[in-house]
Length: 103
Image (cartoon, rainbow, N blue to C red; front, top):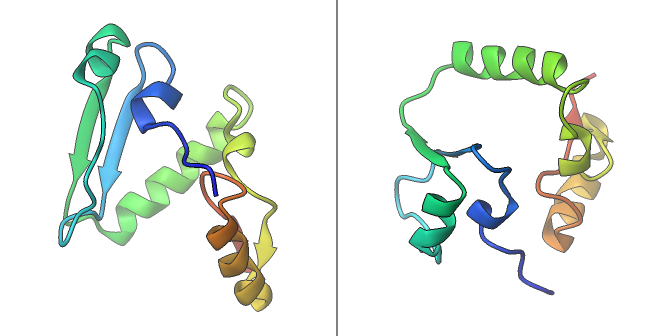
């Protein structure tokens, strides 16, 4: 499976890279500092987030989908009943994230 370029190379100029839930043990990040600096990127770490944070992120996503190509980050969305298929799609890395619809 081909390796995807690191996050800074996939982030728009002036964008933000957010790392959430990667506290223990974290993965090694093979980033070139120049990609962050030249891209004028902000890197944020989020720790101890709550359900309210997830609700705000979901609300933002609904509003942002018309402004940015967020849908292109997801593989096809799977129903919750098809979670096994969603996990298999995640293993194939067909998108940055695999979508799962709760209803």
